[in-house]
Length: 95
Image 1: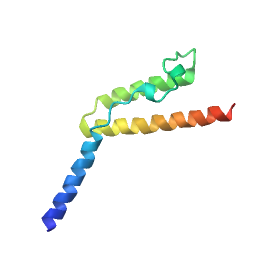
Image 2: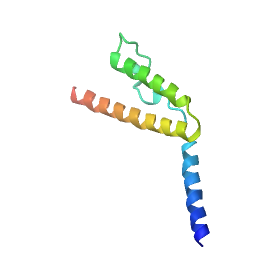
Image 3: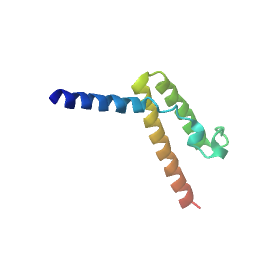
Image 4: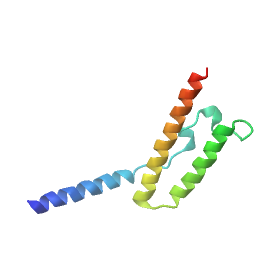
């Protein structure tokens, strides 16, 4: 019985890790308003700067393997979604 419980926990851990392996590479277009996705520095410095930082972080994530890469992607997704939500709130407040 004890071996069964231990094996169950091990299998659950493997299942959780394999779920991370299914996280797709983040795409910049998922986080920026369409009119700002290809902004240049002179057009909109905020979105340009975010895109540059996004591409650098993505490059760093792509150097990783397996679960580490998936965790990096997951963290990028969460961070970028939060930044966009904050931008949307501030934009609405300034109208």
